[in-house]
Image (tube, one colour):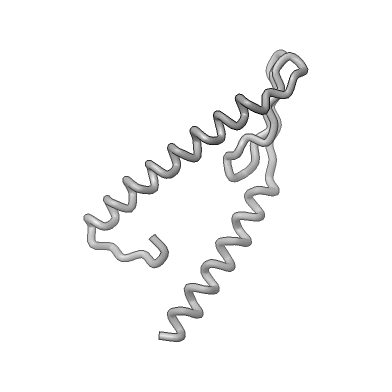
Length: 90
């Protein structure tokens, strides 16, 4: 039992490290008068249109993508459960 708890704790630490690494990755793209900077975790870091930072639009897009991620995760959990697969943490 303790071995399983230790393995789960190690997994969570590794997951946290991977998350931090993904957040540190950024990609910038510019087209015309629009600039977007996206992190490796698919969060929009910066959105500039015609030289003006669009924080409201950035937040709306990030909130929408977070909601999509939650719905996809819920659907995948259901499908994994239907298959009878037991994955710790899901």
